[in-house]
Image (cartoon, rainbow, N blue to C red; front, side, top):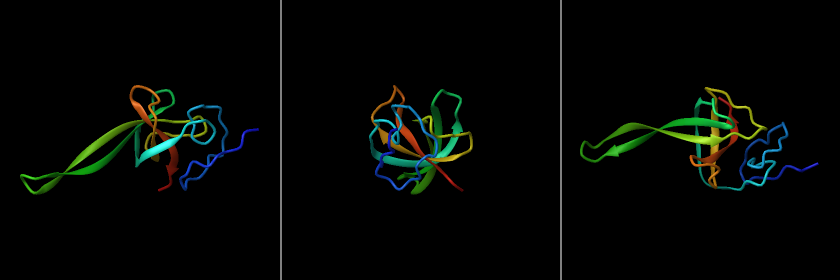
Length: 110
């Protein structure tokens, strides 16, 4: 039986087991770089969730901030259950596919 490894973040380990090689807990995927938290707006793809969060962008001309939205695609390992409307935490990793550079590590409780 394979032992769960520490991923270097203070997150709760998933209770389910998986055989996904792109799982940071049970596979060989290493984490690095940026960490984002946002809401799942779409999870119709296989093992992929689309995350959206707001950020503020400063307009120098008007000396004001405007709201902008960022959408990112993240890999969802087999041991995680994510549905539309969940708040999740994602971490940057090596490119998993053409558009996926992040992996879900935690479902954030409200």
